[in-house]
Length: 262
Image (cartoon, rainbow, N blue to C red; front, side, top):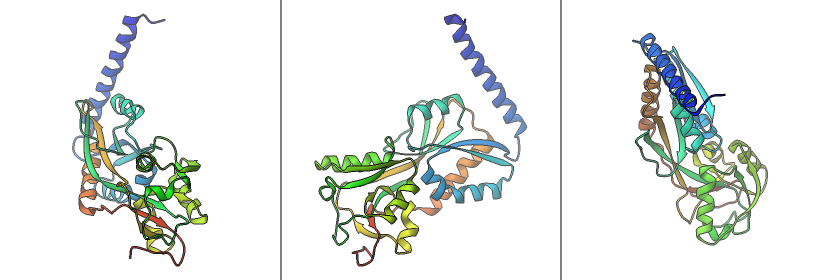
């Protein structure tokens, strides 16, 4: 069994080996960026934001291999912070509120990601506010999800409490349940844009506190950035700058004969 001093020495030995691996990788990758980059991202961003980034990255640098690790809540929690510090993840794209860089983390704001609350029996209301949802059954993503956090806080600030009818890990599952039924589902605006355009969801204005998070690109300052990692960051930054997608907070619901925003 290791002594306390032995345990500390083992930790330093691990860091030395990691630095040696990083140095070897940097030398071998001189020139054209190649090799793996491990990225953490929530399902919503993987599905709706990152495909153009991946396409452009592989067009410019076909030797880069992207390895994605799912982040169910999308938040920059303690587990993700440790993974970045330990080098288990090279970069993370997260959904959170008011993140800023620290001594250990480099945080780059990408864009706002407004919330959408699809479907509600109050289909003919010109606007829906927190008080309208007091006691109303809703379908939510799991605890810790940023969208759930801002939605519940908006309702609580008005003294309203939704009745949680179900919790799901997948936002896509929430969306499918909402389309098929009569409950509210709280999702990101970008994830319902297609259904809105097809007329399966119709927008109503949200009359309440802003339901918005932002996406951020996060990396650990004390970890070296490989050429492949740098190329990923550049491609991600380029996509978000070019797209400039920032929508207003909305409440969505499916069905015919409902009031929409046009």
